[in-house]
Image 1 (tube, rainbow over the protein chains, first blue to last red):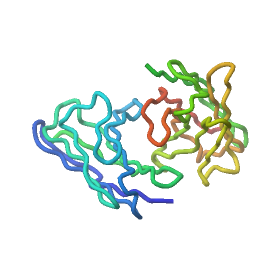
Image 2 (image 1 turned 30 degrees about the vertical axis):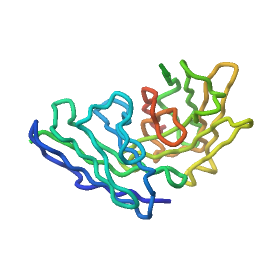
Image 3 (image 1 turned 90 degrees about the horizontal axis):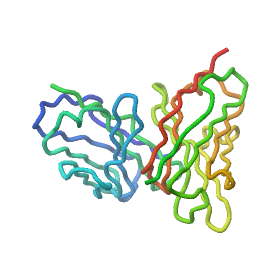
Length: 107
Length: 119
């Protein structure tokens, strides 16, 4: 099973600032990587798939990059609605697996 | 617009079977392009993809090794829904359970069901 490791565990950011989240895979997943956002009491919401393709309706301040084992999610200018948890997920090998998440909180 | 509506009990006794149902609107469980998934989330295990079913001229099933001996996912074409059964549950199976649509990524999610395993 591919293990996904996210860093940092918590990221404190002021509104309007840039946020950079990292995700590392225990083996190559090519570009078969997705990012999700989750707010308390809600299901996760798909943000990015194929490492860098935004899902329908996702603002362009969200961008993804990377391939192989190293990936990054960047939020160019954090808005109040962007605070919450973020998870990466690989779909190169079954079972699909998630990282443990990064909490983005208000500084 | 695809919508998934979950139903099922929120409390299950240890050693019994957890059963949840996910009703689909806006798509078909027999779709040749979709897959239908169960994912759970707990503080101890994080997000865990349990299994999926999909139809490509026949039904296919994939299960995570962690639950493979205990899990069954069943499509119900007459009601356009699919279900999760997890046998012999323990307190470790306490989690929020989600159904989701997606072949390899979860683009649509149900509302989630908190299932507590306790006597």
